[in-house]
Length: 111
Image 1 (tube, rainbow, N blue to C red):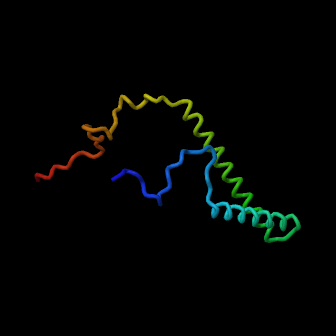
Image 2 (image 1 turned 90 degrees about the horizontal axis):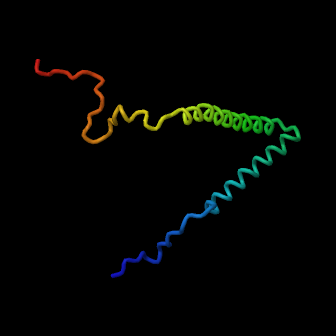
Image 3 (image 1 turned 45 degrees about the vertical axis):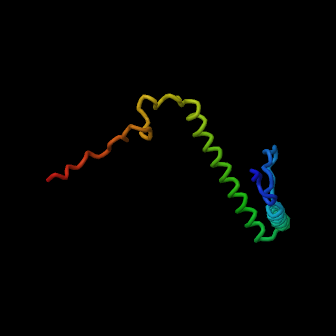
């Protein structure tokens, strides 16, 4: 008996530089961008529903951009000011053979 995979199982492919997308993903993405382009075209001609949709999408994108900037404002100083050996002296509560710190005192049930 050989140790080969059956013919129905494709061989493992080495990772590539660019990701591989399925046809379904590409069709859904192109359709979504076509609908957004249609809404933008209608908004540029003054149609009210399209203006509202373009405004809502723009506000969402601006919020995500602001969230990204706020994350970087908090992350960069934390990255620069952190010491990788800062908590080594305190011990690791998840290490083998070491109990976690006790927050509540033990209850004596001999009463």
